[in-house]
Image (tube, rainbow, N blue to C red; front, side, top):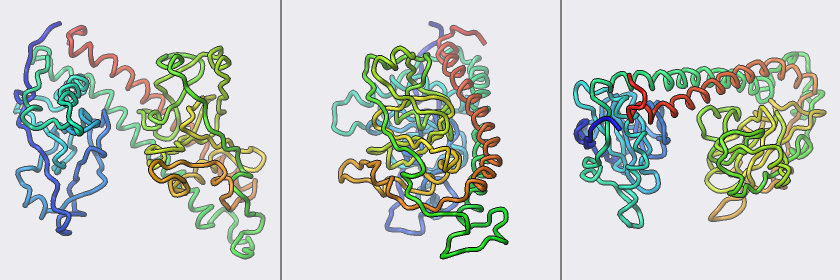
Length: 405
């Protein structure tokens, strides 16, 4: 293996964040991102949005904790240790994040990819202390040693890998615009009732003529997934993707499901009596934190899901799949869950929801308008999935010197 060892502190200045006092309202809802571990994923690349923001007052009060754009942020507490991202602008992080402001001449993207490559090593240091809530403090974080390729290659390594992430980011923006266009059309027609021909449609008791009230269970079949035994897990290829809750936040699965961490063969599916969900099904988590996140995804091929998830299979005689997807998006499913400590969504509760159903002619017009958008989204997400796979294959080879640049 080529290269030498460096400590994280050799790469730049280390800054530990700080949470402004919540008692001072003037610190929050401003123009600067306030980054917490929940705003970062394991591979965030550039952090573009955060749940909360802070103001100029917070910046002035916590000037030493503010970081510039292109700082590399790493979560350093609990099971989130090792989540990583790059700041897209001047921002503040909370105290659970240590950030590296790279030294002059060091490409921040290289630092990001180096830390992503060493996620498990960083987690090993942070989780090895034995405390109930592991914390990787600034001193320990600074001293972590990492092996790096020759320094003259760092910029080239960053350029090669970031080309894939730039493509993924660009695709993500295009997908968001397509999804927004489809969602706006849905809301214009079916929420605000400004659908084609609405000017000449009689409204009776708040319902357009030709529309009807129905229970959600009359529009689709709700079914949970299969138990996924460990002996079937871990295959990267096969005939059917087997989706787990974590796949809902996987790269390339923003709207539709295009990739999975696990695949099974048709023979294996038959062996454990799996029941694949068909194209057009909307799937979502039915229990725990996954349910709270309310991530609903659209199936574009026969797919298996695990028993922590549920699928809504549209009845094609009364509904179209694209309408069903956006209808589900109108609900925060966690609000319909039972259970105190661990929320659990029952299919019977969803089946009993009363919904307004447009005429089939109008639904087909909607499908004609948005189906091409969904097809384009699938193409872009497949492209992103392929780019992420290529990037992940190259990353260790570039860092270990197996691929020369």
